[in-house]
Image (cartoon, rainbow, N blue to C red; front, top):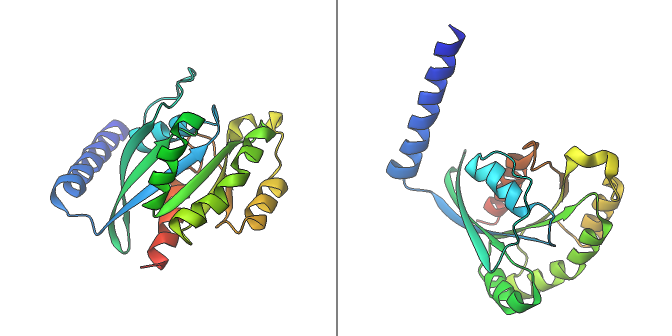
Amino acid sequence: MSSNFNFSFLLYDLFMRIFYRYIVEPTYLFKLLIIGDREVGRRTFLRESIDDNFFVEDYIETVGVDIYRKELIVEEGVIDLMIWNVSTKETFGTLLTSYINTSDGVLLMFDITNLSTLYFLSKYPQLIREKAGEIPILLVGNKLDLKWKREVYVEEGAAFARGNDLLDYIEVSAKTGKDCEKILEVLVENILVQF
């Protein structure tokens, strides 16, 4: 009985994904950026929340830009998200600023076990506002599954978000998937307020 229910649910889920991807036109198309230092887990977060892939231990540095697509279904309709994971290496600095210009929202991600990755983000809130105006910016502390090794506490992340007038501060685990979907929903809700 239980296996039949699981199979039925999987078929329903597959049908709904196909229906919304190929039949229903998206109500909105939003471009999001995810910015962070090396090894903070941007790609793992994207793989977990978008591709539903298993966690991969190997680190692969982003060169240039990776583009991911995700659809969210909210009260306002179907939201088609294009999420751009842009390299923050100096050689791609001008590339990053050109992507900021056309963004609807930004995720600033750091590693809660590495304080320097939070400091790395300090220049981005002002840069984003100069290039894109007052778009929603959400601070994300990743690697919650390693909270016993944390160097950045919730209060510090929240203080950084308040001090830079960011939308909020949320901690996630890209490895376990904890709250990965939530941060996309929070960002999209705040983008929709502007429409």
